[in-house]
Image (cartoon, rainbow, N blue to C red; front, side, top):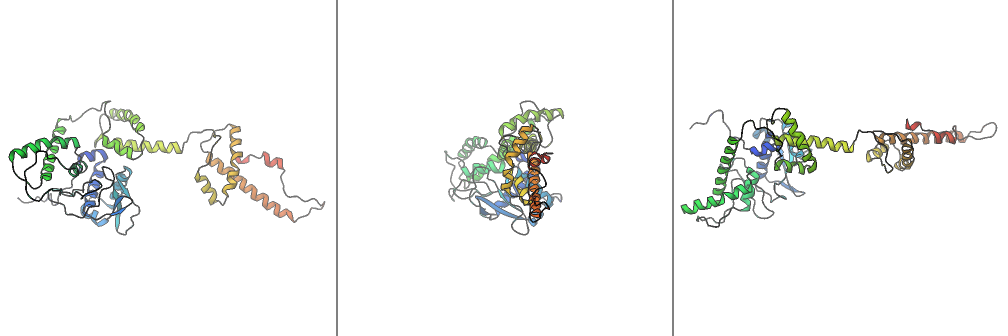
Length: 397
């Protein structure tokens, strides 16, 4: 049968569940990078497998994205905690230098370069436990080379379970539920086989696709967003790994539901991905407001300027010990005045710079008058009285 001119290349594969959680572009790029990591020799550093990806590889495999698109989507994956980026890439010609997080625990053994099989196009290397041989895409371990009938107590290996979970997003409970039917079918047939792991993998994949299709057909097209909606476990895991507080996530759910109900229904592209994006933006604003509050407030008795203040003073060649010596006077004055301000750091900067300039003016005036003698014989080392200096608060204006 001739190949259609509309399909000149093999299609790209991605997980619909993963795309719903992190976004379509992110899911495609993540699975392509995972596939590449399984076909190349990564560099092990800091407990992660690092790999440089040149621009030519992206042009050949993802030609519909430009370099800016690749970097934008990669940054989105890094912000979600799914990959680690090193910028700029250490090798010339590389567009990205990255390491992928393992889905279950720490990093597994480094995978050797392999060629993908026809039954698993562009499939990524599955994560494995800390010891043993790596499981490669389309290639599962076999206990023997000779054909044998399926034992009655046969169970899928932990490597296969991990690969089906990570690569295809199939829940472990669903996989194990198919074991009894699989064993019964092949025990009834009595046929010897070489690779029962591969047969079971194909069996589970077929049933999972059928289950997903039936689930999609049974779901109403315009399902209303009710008050019982909750983000998926994958969305929660991504947000928690990004450092978002669980209580903050739970408190944001009713606001999120109310917003989309007033808009007329759930958003296109998946609720979970929109929820992840919404929480990340709100958490960034909340964290920033906690550090850089714009609300006027009184100065506290134990107030301390942050490190940026001393960095600015250091650039102005102002000694840090001199600035710290003015801190008690600064706090006492503003607590007694009972005033509120949005930024005590800027006020302290003004205070220190004022007294630093005054100190140098007095030193310069003293050196100028030190060698001069008045006609009446009285020497003068200052033009202002001590009372005037002590009562001067022009630095606070």
